[in-house]
View (tube, rainbow, N blue to C red):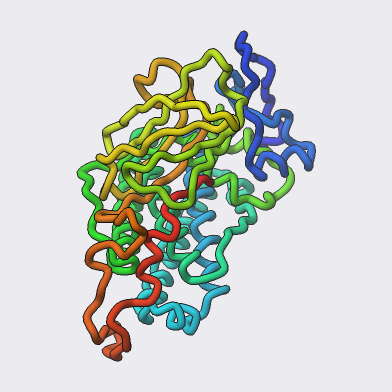
Amino acid sequence: MKLSRCLTLLAALLPITLAAPTASSARRQVAADNDYSTSKSTHLSTVILKCSLPTDSRFLVYALSLEQLSVSFYDSSLSLLSADDFRAAGHPDSVRRGYEQVLKSAKAHSDYLVGEITNLGHPDYTAGCDYAFPVKTPEDFINMSEAIQALAVSTYVGALDRSQSDTYTTVFGGMLGVEARYANWISTAVKYQDLADMSFEYPSSMNDTWTIAGLYVTGCPPGVGPEDIFPAGLVDWPVLTLPDTVRPGDSISLSFPNTLYTADDTLFAGFRTGMDTDMYPLVGNDDGSFSVTVPLNVDGKGAVWLSIVKGDGSSVRDDNMVAGPALLMMAASQERDGGERDGAERDSAEIDADGAERDGAERDGAESALGKNTWSW
């Protein structure tokens, strides 16, 4: 049965006093503009009836959307930035070639998922959305690629627990391994940072990834609303805004919409790394923003996910989310004075993969690791 004939119930709202999250992503706005989405929000109180697309198929479409975002990001950025652009920014030719391999893998992942969804009888739901990314220079691209790979790794870690098929769990594990390999390559070989001091990876929730990915959507194919083909109950969390550069021990200002909390709620910042979550109460500022001190123990942890929650501060969960997540890339040995991190210096003659010597005692742009290390999405 076609999804267009699927019946959807969107009226079962729980007796809550707070407004449901607004649809921050263009993916939902496009749905509203095309008049095929009956709701601008699918808060946890939304109930979706059984439709023709099975749960596992919906999850495959969800995974496909992440791979399509990755393909769009790498393809559009590499089309914009030539090999000369990378050379001018001080990067050896091996860097751009490496990113071409990352793009090749993302396309392979996307093609696999398209094939599986098609084999399950749902080829109409494999069309991708259009995306736009704030990339103008090689450093913009490299910094954002680090964030994109961190998102991909965390998403696939979470996917292993949500797949209802042993076959797809194995496939997602294979994809996870490749995504993690590329994430480490970017942070070490491209940005000359030490390996992250982590033993476990944080599993992103579907709502977290859904929120982040949706912010780069500029348009989607008409005819099918997100609620018809993605897992039920996905939520766009309010955006959490923080400074571009954050270091351990800094007191930072945070801002976010007040749609999911009241003045009576106690708010906490949850810093999530691997299997650990450190919770700290927020301090209100006169201008309506909040402050929190970044814990020292996140230094060198790599990807640190920051979310704002309400309640007793015991954990970060879908039912107590207020805003986020934001991403902090915490490289090892970041210096407080903004200087180079230890180990950023290179030998006096740098040799690229082609065997050609490159002049200069250090790679131009090596300081970019500190230029921007947060993503508010």
